Image (cartoon, rainbow, N blue to C red; front, side, top):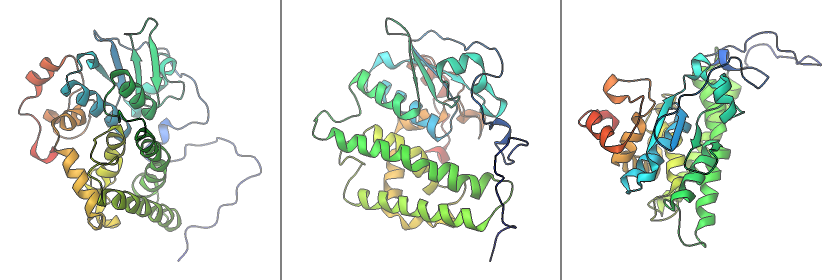
Length: 292
C-alpha cells in the first residue's frame, strides 16, 4: 500500500500557502510579533502566560504542587494565551518568549524581573527557586535531569510527529503514522520498563520529571491526548497506567489541569489564578469525577 503520489521537493522552498491542518493559521517560517499588545500583569510575583496543553499543564501542576507543599511564594497569576487566535505573536508575549510558544513565565520577585521560557527551563527554575520536587542528594540529581530532558527530546515525536499525522493533519498518510507510532510505542515501553521497578521516574521520590512526562504520556494512556489509546493499545503498558492513575489522583494535579483550560465543562476550567484560598473557594466541589 502506498500513500499519495510522491512529492518532489523544489530546489528552493518558498512559503506560498498554509500547510493545512488544525494549526495551520499559527505556523509561519518567520519569528517576531505580528501585532502590538501588552501582556496583563496581576498582583503576584509569578506571572504565567499559558494554555492547558501538555506543556502548559506541566507548569500549573508544579505551581499547584508547590502551593500544596506550603510555598506561599509560588502564588501566581495565570493569563490565558489563545494560541489559535495568535496571542503568542503579540509584542508583549514575544518579549517574554522570542520563540512564541507557551508557556512563558515572568518572575517579578527578583531585583530585575526574570523571564523564563521553554517548559523544561521553567520547571527547573521553579524547582531550584523553592528547593522542591528535585532530589536533595546530588548523586540522584542526574537521574532526575536525565528523565526531565528525556521528555523534552521525546515529546516532539509524540506531539509534532504522531499527534500531528494521526489527529491533526488535513489528510492521513500511512508512512508518517507508522513511523511515529513505532517510536511512540517504543517510548511507552521505555517508561513501562522504568516504572516496573520504580514508583516514580526517580525511584520513590515524586519530582518535576514526573510532572513533565505525565501530561504527555499519561494523557496518551488515559486517552485524553489524541484519542489514540485503542490504536496504540496503551493498556499493554500496565506500569505506565498505574503511574498515570496515581499522579492523576493528586489534588494539586487536579487543580493544575483546570488552570487555563478551554475545553470540557465550564466547571473544570479556571482562566484566572490568584491566591490559594481564593482558588479553593471558587473551585471546591467543581472537579468533575472524570477529571480525577
